[in-house]
Every structure is written in structure tokens, then in C-alpha cells.
Length: 235
Length: 77
Image 1 (cartoon, rainbow over the protein chains, first blue to last red):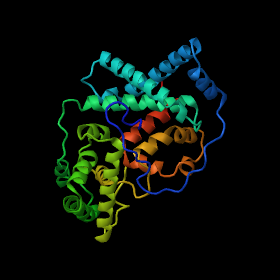
Image 2 (cartoon, each protein chain N blue to C red):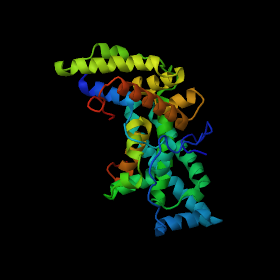
Image 3 (cartoon, each protein chain N blue to C red):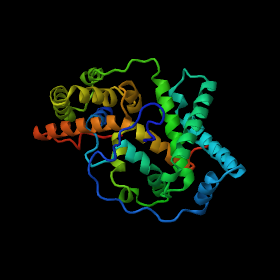
Image 4 (cartoon, chains in turn green, yellow):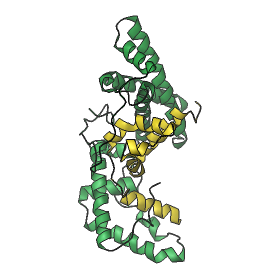
């Protein structure tokens, strides 16, 4: 089960979209604090109950942290609703963490490992809330912006040629599904987990589609003799 | 649209040139990656392909930024 789609859609396993060299091995020993978390969460009775309460408080803190970082992007949402989102994220993260205790190998501190579940749950809920009731744009609305782009004269010819080639390649080289995913995520700014839910698929599977589409475009541009690295930035 | 916006959009359309992990593998390794970053070690040697994925995936990048901020204590609740 993938933590990226914890509640609604069963995940398809996507470990790597391109082959990678083997990573160095994990540390072999847990730090004392992490060991104590595991011991108490696996215990029975009051010890276990107390550990679960402490874990929930930790997850709620992380979920509130994420909500505080993102709430400016949701001006129409009331304060009470943010509290509910954080609480629900902590609840869902608690379920995920407890279900995955045996997969914790001590590659980080237990608290860092647990935090990421709460941050994920809160981030996904906030993105879905931001797109609630909105139609997902699957067509290339953003191309209109390019036509009014203000570029330096030296850049204009190169950029225009590259853009036109990318635009043509999206229409000619990609499959309809690849085109929809690429346009929605990369051009129209639709969050990948929101799109995954609307298309009844998973975030991992959708990213694989996005990755394959990008590789096709890069290969096409390379075949056209266009230089890419001086023209792009991903942040 | 300024050059930076245009370049950024092209970057999003074309993705990172390097080999990268997927979203599931990114989530799997994210806690380790962030702790290596915060402690000043080289996370890209230990977790190859994750940095490229963060460049190509806005959602994973957001979650990485949040975990990094939370763990390093850069922000206060």
C-alpha cells in the first residue's frame, strides 16, 4: 500500500521512473528515542495507549504546521475548517503510521519518519480543498500567455522556436493521455494528487505518465537539434 | 511573461534531465534525505535520484520543503 494514496485509491507500485544506481545501505541501529517509540507503540495496555496519544499529538503538531504554511493559498476557507483539516490529517496519519510500524527501519529518527505522514495527509487535503468544485483544465489554456510573453531580444528567437516546437510536439508526439496529464500538471498547475483523484488513478502512476511524456518531448527536441538546458529551470 | 516564468514553465513541461525516482520512492526516502540535509551531509549520494524528482514534481517538492522546515526548526507554529 502506498502512503501517497492512503484513503481513496489503491496505489500501483512505482519505485523509480528511471534506473538508478544502488543506494548505500541503511544504518543498522535505531537511536534510543526511536527504539522507545517502537517499544511503547508495540506494547499493550496503558503504555501503548499513552504512546498512541503522544504520537497523535506529534502528528497533529506536524499537520498544523503544514496548514499554517499553506493557509494563505486558501483565503476562502474559515479558521475552523483549517482546524478540522489538521485534525483529520493527524487522524489519518496515525492510522498510516501504526499500519506501517514494521516498515520503519531507522533510516531517520522515528519522529521525522512519522512527521512525513502527517505533512502528506495535510498537504493532500489542502490541495483537494483548494480545487474542490473547480473544473480541471485539461486543455492548454496557458499557451495564450506565451503569445504575450515579453522576452529580451536576444532570447526571443531561440525561445520562440523552442516553444513552438514544444507546442507542436505535445500535439504530435504524445498520446492523448500523456498530453492531458502534461498540460494539466505542467501548464495549468493542477496538483498531481488532485488530478489523480479525478482520473481515478494514483499519484505514482500519474507521475510515471508525466515522466514518460517529458522524455518523449526531450527526445523529440533533441532530434530537432534544439538545446534545452540553457532554456529551462524547474524551480 | 518574464524570462524566468517562461523558463520555469519550460522546465515543468520538460522535467529534469537527470534520472529520477518516482513519487512513491521519494516518499519512502524523504525522511532520511531531509535528516541528511539538515545534518550537513550529502543526501544526493545516499539517495540518488530524489533531488531530480523534487525538481520535477511540485507536490513532492512542497512536502519536502515542509518536512525540511519542520525538522530544522526554521518555522514556529
